[in-house]
Length: 236
Image (cartoon, rainbow, N blue to C red):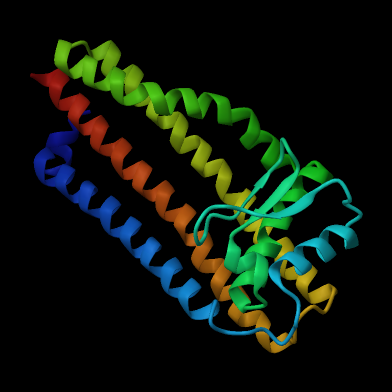
């Protein structure tokens, strides 16, 4: 198919795709920053810190081999390390009882619960992860070599490798959504906060989830742009 003809001018479409990727990414980052800035200033009705909530959720789910530690990173650097079984929380999340702290801490514990219960999507993501890392390191290098040497086989190989990253991001979406769902369920069932805090926590978690959606959209836009460029090069 002649993509350039079909879309009415590949340069315009390419610029549009770049703009879409940039705007979606900026909007997502702005949304999460605003949500975090707002809800880190909003104290929950609980006097529990993010660390205490994380530890209590782990215990309630029968998980005693995962440690909750204060990480050395800045804001929104929280993560769960399945290899070392550590929930690493940034300083504000670890030490405060804000809406943001409890939401983020419980979300990261949600990932620990996924590992402990053998959640299928996270196993699939971990299977794809090594290939995604390799493809991320090689895709652009192979693409540039393909365009520079005018070798379509290298161009399409680079595009295929870039697509592996998109597949990884796609598989990541249900993992993140499920972790947030588990977070809310545990907070509600264990009555850590008043029910009036739940809507704000959902807003915080939804803003965080949108960053993953935005990353996937940006990757798809870039993938389409690369296909357009490859198709144009093949026709010349």
